[in-house]
Image (cartoon, rainbow, N blue to C red; front, top):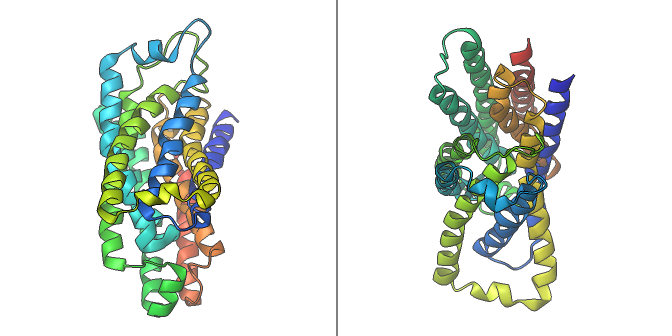
Length: 336
């Protein structure tokens, strides 16, 4: 029962993340770098900070928690800087491939690296016992995402250039694939950052929130990378004026804040959900892959709702559904 509750909590957070790119469509007359930086302030600073405060027990402070193990704090932030590259290119993959295909490829790669590497670092033997179950589960997840990616390539072939531009304004398959793969590899550093930040826990902290200080350190590192790039693009493209468009500021700030809240909900939900899973179990080790699989499922649901798959053949739709079914199976496989 606890496992089911944990999975449901992770699923709710995943749905929030997969919905986070929808409010961005409501941002008006801002360049990509302006709205990406603004939503990042909320997603990687404000909401993670508020979340981390929930992990502070009475008589302690957030500063005390972060100073429990300075090495762990630094390593979590360092992996966050690397993850920031993934987060940055992740946003670009949505721009070039759309929500469905972009998230599928990026999150598939992220799922594999973010699950397997921490397991290897802990000395897990991936070729026997629970380690083998973990490896097979990841392979099933990747297989499902690969099928979805294939459906995306068929969509690209079946759609006219005009239809592609209607569905995804800046559609570019080759560029998008390269960016999405890079995003997936670097995004896996988030999982490594959470692993590095495990010592950032003090006595009396609620198990539901104990991962949130480490999450804050990772997202702070990611903000540094993204802010540097976005401010560079503001200067290069002369788009600093976006922030001064007072007639649009309230609307754009609201939807950027909503996007940031929805994005952060995935890691808030992951931390809470893991507290219901058995420590050291296969499900605990597989939790990162579960989150990524759910993100792909929900992102493709949004892709269908937003008509990114409009105009494709029924064969393509069938392949997409098969891929989603494989992903759903990957969620329950470790418990079989």
